[in-house]
Image (cartoon, rainbow, N blue to C red; front, side):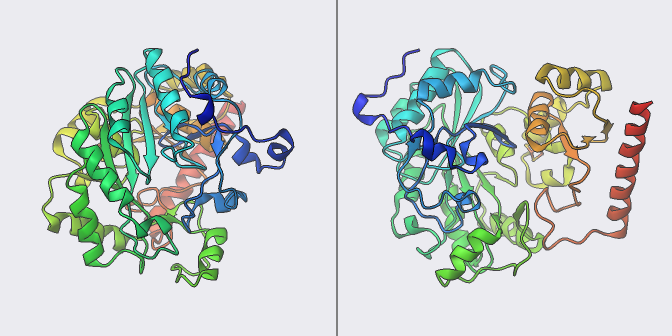
Amino acid sequence: MTLSIPASRVLPVMPAEQQAGLDPYMAQIITNRKSGLSLNHIIGCPLDCGYCVRHFWGNFEQKVPQLLVTTPEAVEVLVGHEAFRPDTTPIQLFNKATDPMLPGVKPHTFAVLKELDRRGLTNLVLVITRFHVSAADMELLEGLRNVRVTLLFTYSGIKDSRVEPIAKSDTTVSSILRAARMRRRTKVILYWRPIVPGWNDDPETMAGVLNVGRHADAIVFTGYYHKEENAEYLRELGVPVPYGDDFQRRKVLPGELDARVVQAWRDSGIATPLFRKTSCGVTYAHQVADYNGHLGVPELCDICPVAQVERCTAALRPPSEEEFRAALESFGYDTSAPFLVEDGHVLTSALGEQRRYALQHELGFQVWEVAHPHVHAAHGRALQGYVLSPEEQAQLDQARDRLAAAARYDDD
Ligand code: SF4
């Protein structure tokens, strides 16, 4: 493998004894997330975003990025992973614990992209950044021929530099505008997140973000992870944190706030489409159907362009039971676990999040866990701000009963 990183730009590898002390999740080089199979062999970031997910895994204080393995090794681990499918599996680079465009990290980001491209792989690759993207970076991205890259710029419009120190500069906005101006095959998404009551949900801030978004291929919006660790950090800085102490597994974006975002977008009159889900924005930008099969939750799609709905409709097909079992087998997963193919999704139990995502990406069809209910119009987010109606509770109970019955049947 030829990975062209000048010796002076190769980051140090974290000493083994330090790696042994990492939280197991931080130590994982590959994890499967909803938006793609994620490569994270570099951890550490100096940007100090107050809501950073690294708070959850005790890594927030690591400001200097370090390698967990070398980049050539990391590429081999990625393409050799059980869930990796050439040309199909969506990939994310450095989405967990660093920013892929930091000066020290960037040579590694480009080395991975160039190597995947050299191998002729056409997988979608998501690169999420809020940092500086230069003209030279765009030329390099435009020089790729096979991998289909999307730059997702996290830009929230938050002005409080205690929450986002980078808000003091115009780094993100100028990078969005530059990338949008220079893009040809690279896609550019304004990743409008986190949207948090009291931080950036006033009409003026929303209009400002949307105005930047008019230059992008798509805008994707979402809430933030309301968890004890980041809430505590922000409260210590004196930042008002909404939602009380009702901490959540999923991102929080109440229905009322969702409606205001959509209305602000409509009122703005901009032509850039708005999406609730990352994979929807990415696939729209590349003119392919959503690889997560979100059309199985049709209330997500009320803001989607007609042509994209048609693409997703044409692609959405429930797997037969045989096909689902074959998919389980192809990944090496337990084929005896109970599942039910239902309208718009496959219901599973105790398969685990990462396996469900691998199946979802492979089949382009939603794969749900019976213990985590999907509430109408909550759009897969935390249930904060949503209440299960008696009908939804009944549906959930029935789903659990059906799966339990299927499990009994499988045991026979
Ligand atoms: S049609 Fe629905 S699933 Fe497909 S991209 Fe649009 S919002 Fe997403």
